[in-house]
Amino acid sequence: MNTSKSFEDLVVWQKAHQFVLKVYELTQNFPNSEVYGLSSQFRRASVSVAANIAEGY
Image (cartoon, rainbow, N blue to C red):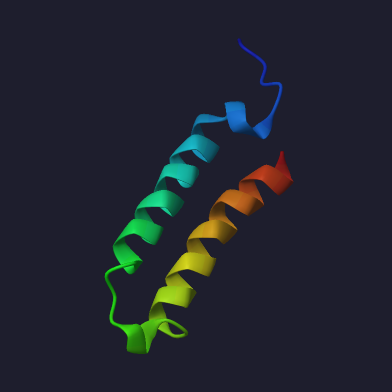
């Protein structure tokens, strides 16, 4: 069994990071009226997933 040296070695964190990048890409196309609304909420939620994995490591 391989041991990870960093949270970045975890496959689950790598997938969460890819999710964050995709969310940022998708929310870039949201209307300007949603900059502080829905797009911000989506972005914060996606970052929270990756951050919680890293913190739990």
